[in-house]
Image 1 (cartoon, rainbow, N blue to C red):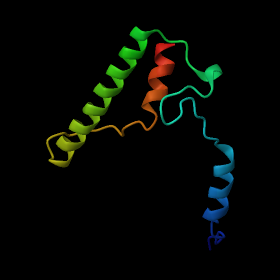
Image 2 (image 1 turned 30 degrees about the horizontal axis):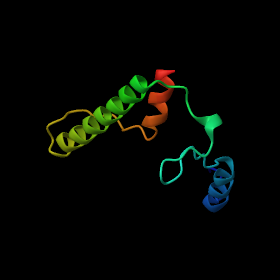
Image 3 (image 1 turned 45 degrees about the vertical axis):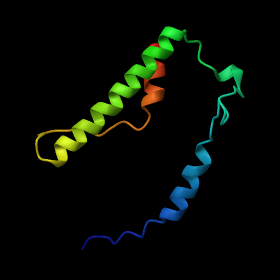
Image 4 (image 1 turned 135 degrees about the vertical axis):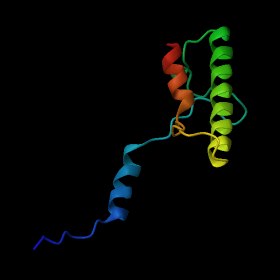
Length: 92
């Protein structure tokens, strides 16, 4: 006979997870820099390229989701939640 495992305490697991992640804010609500040491060293051209790639990626995700829901797309990857971070790392 198999051993019965004890129930998982999800509340405890989530409480530990919340302690590991801190919010990092570089800009305030009006766009003023609050932590200049965290600002990436990017040129205006790189910032424009970053924005262009983020918008293109968002549009691609939206169109792929619509096609997938209509049954017109046989495959679809899961969208990445942290696209802006990924693009900044790519540009560096």
